[in-house]
Length: 309
Image (tube, rainbow, N blue to C red):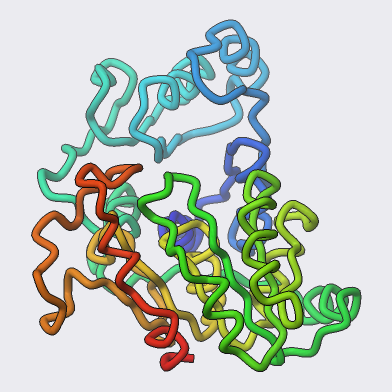
């Protein structure tokens, strides 16, 4: 969702180095407008001020502008410590003194692509669509490794890092309804979840969760005939490759994090006038269903999703 911002900056002549944590860095290597990717040596959580000071000294004098995309205090520290003269970001978490060019956080949750692209200072943000690209030969090599042909299989991404309230529970039932090979993709933490789905449809399913690099997963998504996923990172990857997809929403909202893809079909019972009683509780943006019924995803049938493929 940050790619349109980078494309805008590149188009006006800025040479881009992206700093990212190691598990995010490969995403930026699939963006041709990025000149270099710097992997940050930080663990998740905590200021880690000593490590940031050390890296700040190493980077001193190398950059004219820093666009600080996360809204956290610690994200804005490194550009200050590196002496970057122009530091652009949103207000929040006492960052007034850390940023030189500050945008106010919008009261209502905007689409995240527009939220990030606004840091460019440009207009026409509603037209932005994320785009990823891999060399055709790289995709074909990965498909050959797994004995696959382009468009001949369905990718399912049943995980969602945020929590259970974003995970549709009927992937296994859907797999049994399909007559095409199904690849289950996700992180190592989602391997057991994917294995339980594979056990429901062992003839068609292959569980590759935790067994691919992120770039391999990208290639498998780029070559898929369809992708079915929750509102997750891999959903946005499928959208950026323009693959036909079905995106399933529960506690979150497609008004905030939509799959920006003309070939995407969104299922969200909140927007279904025929669903009764209405989901007045959605979107709650909670990790677990606070009411305990989990209707927003439980009541989306596998047959309904099958009809969209």
